[in-house]
Amino acid sequence: MDAGSHSISSGKSSAAAAVQRPPLQEAGSRPYMPPLSTTSRNPAAKCYGDRFIPDRSAMDMDMAHYLLTETKKDKENAAAIAASPSKEAYRRLLAEKLLNNRTRILAFRNKPPEPENVFAADTVSSHQAKPAKQRRYIPQSAERTLDAPDLVDDYYLNLMDWGSSNVLSIALGDTMYLWDASSGSTSELVTVEEDNGPITSVSWAPDGRHLAIGLNSSDIQLWDTSSNRLLRTLKGVHESRVGSLAWNNNILTTGGMDGRIVNNDVRIRDHAVQTYQGHSQEVCGLKWSGSGQQLASGGNDNLLHIWDVSMASSMPSAGRNQWLHRLEDHMAAVKALAWCPFQSNLLATGGGGSDRCIKFWNTHTGACLNSVDTGSQVCSLLWNKNERELLSSHGFTQNQLTLWKYPSMVKMAELTGHTSRVLFMAQSPDGCTVASAAADETLRFWNVFGTPEVAKPAPKGSHSGMFSSSFAHIR
Image (cartoon, rainbow, N blue to C red):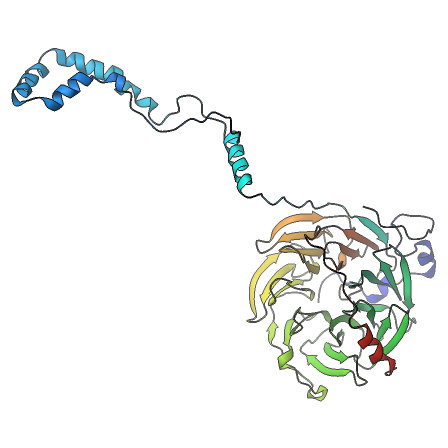
């Protein structure tokens, strides 16, 4: 069990406190006002060589030429001359003119150019050949901060998600709020009955229109947010609260405190089509891979499972479906899960307060590729969709967001501002902005991933008709 987790009752506040702090308004704004709109080497330098060129002024060229062309008789004369007193004079001249210059060997004639100038010139010529990529500016403070009163301080829940229609959903106690990032407006979708609440998980369907809400009572509600209409309630799927949800096209996968994972086909009346049983405690993390072929699940039993669609039984009565990999390396609850967008079989996972590690897995082989001790509880993980970077959010003691360069895992930035553990993160559809929600009851927006080089087209609601027609006759 992960250290430092609070009971679910700690997230509830009195009605009077809610009145004093209206949700999803600019933090610190009083009194209540309508939501605010979104705010805000030098080529001319002399160059010296470093090649040694002998000084021929110290040499007797006539004597050298004579010695090279002398005859036998001349050699005998030269031997006599060498024995003469003039030999000493020649040696003195040799030492004075040549040997005393040894200190100048491999030495610059004058002071060498400064290294900075040389580097600058090299840089200029290099940039002319290939422009260097400018390092991205990463703001160290949040772009904006909103109040989030009654946010439940529970590590095992998943209370925020950002849909493909650019609407952020966040559960505050018993109420689900929707914040439209395009207009900055806030709306209340539903307040569940106290017997069913609080809300324990939330997840947008791929169409960005339909929203799944998991409840403390074990029920799962499916909503059409375009018409604020409850389409369906799934009952009897779990025996206790539903803390994690994940969509795979028309399949809604749910994870409960009972340790069960269930695939629910929302198009049919008998929605429970597959059951995965491998966790002995609460399932607090669920994520489908981008291809939809593999499911990662993390639990309070410190286990990480990889499930493969090809190994799943088509009959719910089959009970247990065999996992592809059962990974036991983490030493605390495994909640933070993130599939890599540029390598389909790469999964990043984060452990709780007794583990504090980010681990990377090859989900085809089950091999752990790397493990990094972050020094604090890992609450959430997000990959940058445009660069090879990973963002993590943390609990005790700094309550920070850390941006890592992958695969070196060098820290690029640490974003501080939250005063309590950063429990939840969600990423905007364009991949640039990250929303973080913490136990300090604030919601902060960070422009941490920059701007993509090419703007992605707005997602199409291609599944809207399928969802609506499916739910229409299954009420």
